[in-house]
Image: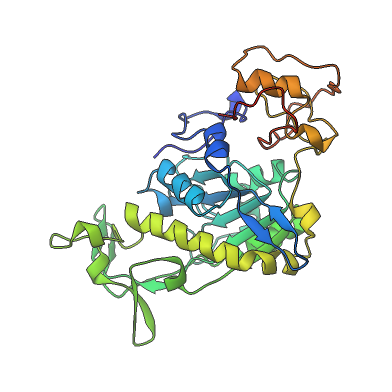
Length: 350
């Protein structure tokens, strides 16, 4: 599966990458019904999420994952995969750039070694997930680290004649998740939350035996298994159906946990909502080099005319008399695709 890197990523950062099957504009359009989080004081807050993960979802297509997000009214802005990646382990380059959102969910750790030679914090700082988080820290308000569950696998696996897994061997989560959360909090001054739930809350295809969590052999791929019931391709990877079910369950858990996560991280709903009229963000129109308008009525754009040019397919960015025309620096993050109030064109952002 190719990595997910959207048009706002500079060309210099797009090496070894392909066009994603679902563009940022298509995501924004498909997720028009945003996840509404009803906070304690009664305010409904629109929240955008990014999912940064290893190969957990590799068997599923991005289109299916975004369809699930739309069906569950969950505002998923981006998914960035990297096969073999961990918190201290570099992957195979599927995502050298991770696309950020106000809330970033990090689901990594299985690929990390039990013991790291040298300072694990230094290794984390050298990983793409951390460097991209550092560059996007103006846009990010909360980072949620998901604790991957420990379980016993039921496959007999041999990798390249060197590594063998036997049934009953424990698949362990990475040991550096708390250190990663501390690093992000201390070095980047971002709010963090560690999300831990039982494995059966997050994945289908698990069974409890004598108090231990096992892969359910009936849901594992084999010569005799019913393809409709398969949730696991191997000891470590869910099937396409298993990955889709995992996405549904993760979304459900996030909806349950988010109010507490915001409270525990001492985030106000006003700050977590990162509105796109923040002057530190660039206009969403790819052809425009200006910052978003300081008035929130202009949404994620510098002016209404620039928004009209985008939705009507104009190659040249044109600006209205109320455009503030503040040039954006080269490394400024792009705004979210929010339509201005009283737009000059009623066409949707696509």
